[in-house]
Amino acid sequence: MTTPTLAQVIGPRTEGAIYENVDGAFKVLELVTDPARARELLHRQSARFAVVVRDTRREDGQPFAVGSVWTTSDRLLKAGGNDRCPICEFWRCRCTG
Image (cartoon, rainbow, N blue to C red; front, side, top):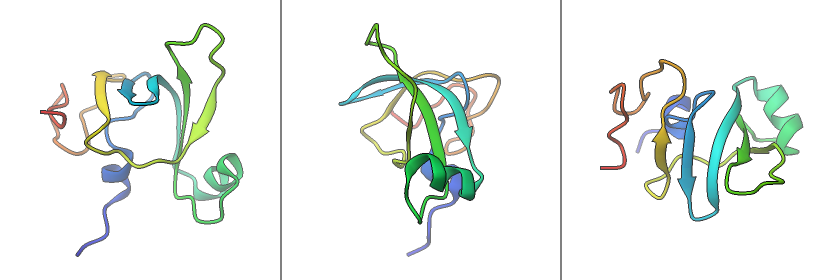
């Protein structure tokens, strides 16, 4: 079994992207790939990345950092910027079927 690449665990969560899962719908404000800064944001020694998001379904939603990997339960609602999805490599992500 191979270890997933950083792009695979982050998924299509680039700055400006909006995605949803069972916890809510989130706009990506910042993608942090510097491990030292990610560890600081997440208060974890093993963090490789962090995604700073804001819950778009809450009026009082404040930015916070997450370190969860992209899974099949996550669904991209809007791609960020002009980035292709790092997993399926399409401009409009097809990872969620």
